[in-house]
Length: 113
Image (tube, rainbow, N blue to C red; front, side, top):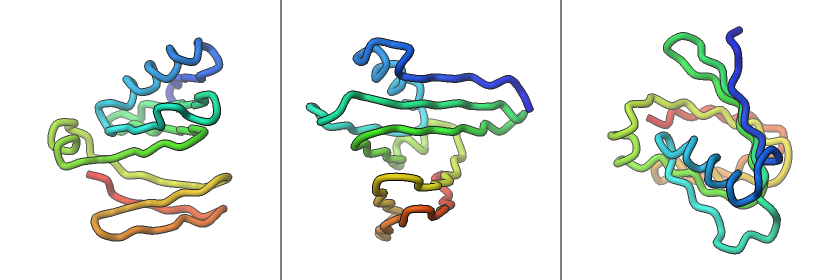
């Protein structure tokens, strides 16, 4: 496997970490977080280039809303498949008009073009 690129929020000041994390995902998602989150920002990402494909592991703590709007899809140039493996917390996944509550320990695969 290729060399990975890593990000861990603990390596940066909290405000800087969230801004760097947000900029790193901006081409793929529109991201919303609470203005006054109840807990400090925490996130870890690791990605590997597999030729024409990018494999990414992403863990984020706290309330976050990721959206792949039509505008983002049209401008990103990225075909995106999302694989959720929920280990802790809760996850509501919306795809079109369908809303799905993801159970702990579940694996969900969704095309997010």
